[in-house]
Length: 130
Image (cartoon, rainbow, N blue to C red; front, side, top):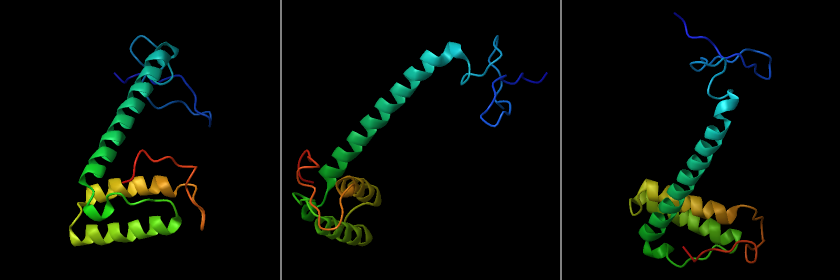
């Protein structure tokens, strides 16, 4: 016996392709009875993801090479210099690829919103230098 399909319709007015839940005409995603559970699952996923990001950033700071410790990211030129040094360090094997990617993520945060000649001073409050 084939599983019943969900009765919900997509934006294009097509039927949902997911199987309906037992005792319901809708799937988990469209069943109003699961809305609260879905919201809690989303919150839990966000908390887990944020915790993983914080741990990865802390690990990257701890494993950052000496030449990177205490460097500031106040101008676009500072960011470019750190990027160049980071690429050299990863290529030479001084920094592991994964650690380099985490450091690059921190550098990208500093770069966000920054334009040529502008400073991040006053807009970005780092928790400390790298």
